[in-house]
Image (cartoon, rainbow, N blue to C red):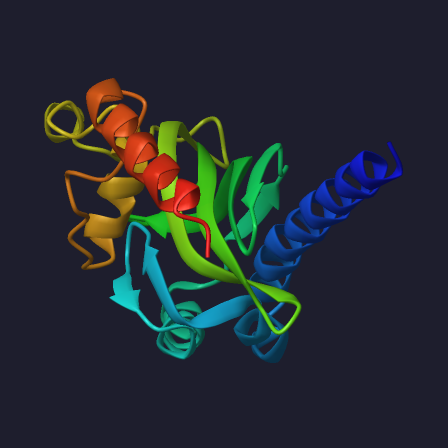
Length: 207
């Protein structure tokens, strides 16, 4: 009985540590605490977002530093909700929102992206590190800061973009970034199902 209680306590501690890791990484990123952000990632981490895809925690942090210098600073709210632990491996999925104020064709706009962040994590020498970071897109919205101004978008073009991240892809295009049209999103449930199945297989292998 005591051993079972110890196991439940360790699972609880691991889950809370992972939730703290996920929150800390995004907070550090938003506040330009790149030293703290770097410490959250495994050296071999794989990261894929609307503007970046690559391997290596340090490489992603440095790319973020450059990106934020050029494109401004979006913010993130993260609500870690679902962690699964298998020995020294774990996965964490977190409802999240990305929000940003930008200028599009001379009009100041706010846009919000509703999504989930998904990460693999591994424990090395007692510390959990993020081994991956992916965005699972749900939907997004955009509006002019001044409601009297029309939203400066090409609606015909917008309709050709993925519904789970069409405004994000549109504004990234205006910044000169071509967004991958095959990112993970709720509008393609088969792709999400295959993604989660692979993550389950990775987790089941333990360490």
